[in-house]
Length: 309
Image (tube, rainbow, N blue to C red; front, side):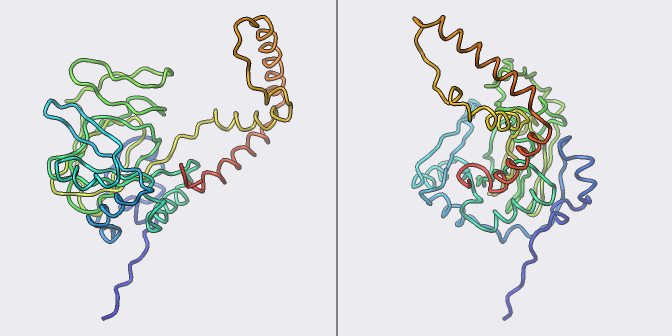
């Protein structure tokens, strides 16, 4: 019997039934959208394949559960504990999936290259039993794609982001408490949960949402989905890279600052000198240097996030 040849996923098939242009113009970076399948995703991995990933000593494996009081818990676990915790009702999440399976690296690069994404891409996989999942939260990834591999999962989500371009994860606390964030650069309001939307993901579906979108997921069947997200890469990183190239040739900028309160007057003088040099470097910085830093960042990020470097 001849083996059936599987056509590789293209950016056109991922964005379908929208065109790539429609997806980029109407949804990307703006609002969530469910892209109904079917797509050939189920061949990528099965339940036993997820357990094999969990057993890999190089894999980062997390287990998550919502307790009877509604509080969410997630822990980094030892690889050989995965099957036991899953049997007791914990969902399993394996991070940096693209480092272990070339099919997922290919999927990551297809999305990144097809949509012209500057950032590195982060990829994980989640396996859940019926009735299990994660509570309402949002992630800092500027863009997130959910690829439903097998089973069905109910997603509840906000129609717009709680904050534009967040820098940190936030979990919705129980009761009337306001959400918190580890970032001091913005405040977060509690969402109106009566205004949240619900969709059911089936095998071959793709669900897209932007960073800061509140979302929760609950498995209807035993199910598995792949998470693909773009990593934060703000302009501050670009400017830092360009200024570092200008400043580090000066050995004074390579010094470690002293930590001696008794020498405060000296430290104050040094700080004023560094600040004067920084102002001069900023004043002399050119658009060409910033663009060169962008290109350098693009080349590095093409290798992927985390250990893929």
